Length: 293
Ligand SMILES: [Zn+2]
Image (cartoon, rainbow, N blue to C red; front, side, top):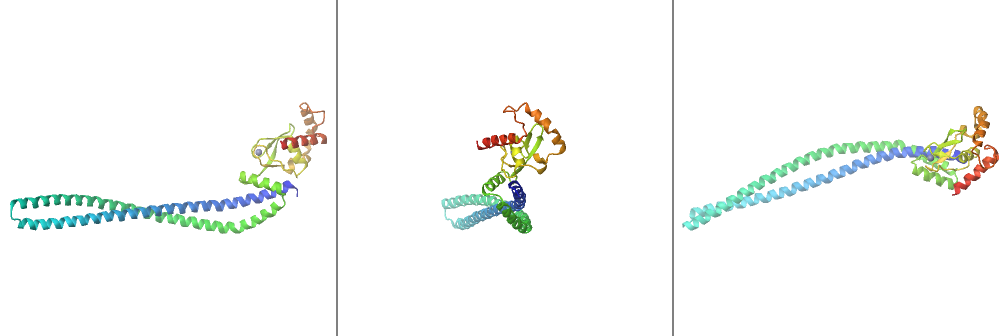
């Protein structure tokens, strides 16, 4: 097998490996997202619980204040009954009034705090329900990931060793180019050269549609051992067997002299026939020159 055939085999296996890896990766990404969401919900749950604890502590403090004030009021009431003069009586009465006002404030605040505790508890309940739901989703995502790993695992191992075997058949330099392009194009490293118009020598990259020079076509036609990249998208160009110059149909062969005539007008570099071996050799040399630039 020549270089291009080996690269196409590598490309085929490489695409399969990538497709399988993508399946596992998307299942893993989905599962990780569920994990992150649950972790966030747990953190929020902890915050709500802490808030409730703090609110309850405040409430408890208010209850103590209220009890203290109540006890003081009762002591004062006893004093009131035993007061001996008017001044003392008024003083005790005043203090009792202040304490009653304080008690009212405490009760008001305690009611507010109690409302807050209740509201936070309601939020916590809703939150807990959400956690139950999200946990179910996480479990499903986990099952899906496990199933995917099981399905893919064995096949992926097989394909990966097949890929290594295919890669071993490609020389170092070319393999590095392939790996780089495959990485950049997400596994679309090879592009077929499309014949737009054979008569006018118009060719295009099958992936990005940019024009491919005739020299490239000629070179790929004559040898399966040239690695030529598309100048625009960097993909490695190849020709289908049926597109090669040597495999032209009878009809195309019949059109050949006409095409040579048609292009002769634009041929300014000596009177060589465009399809003569000399012309192809010259095109090749020209292309080599531009490729090195
Ligand atoms: Zn291209």
